[in-house]
Length: 75
Image (cartoon, rainbow, N blue to C red; front, side, top):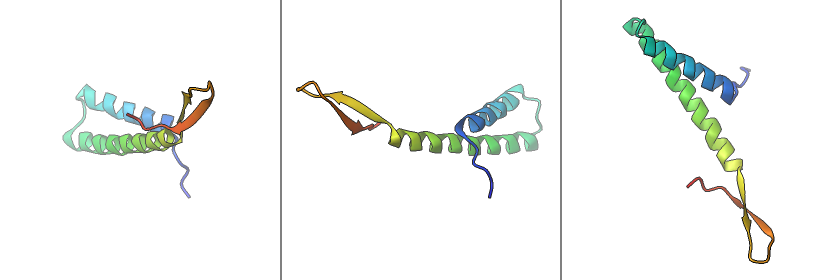
């Protein structure tokens, strides 16, 4: 079973892909391969962020001074 790559590792790989593409030193074939890899890393990062977003809760102050937890809606 392949080890799961964490968010930070995926983000680093995405940043590396962007840097490589920005240099303009790649052949078209190399650029396409790096771009494809970057897209996969971006999707991985988005999936991780969505998962965390669903786990985040916000605390809302109630009129009686207590706090109530509600799911984070992201908007």
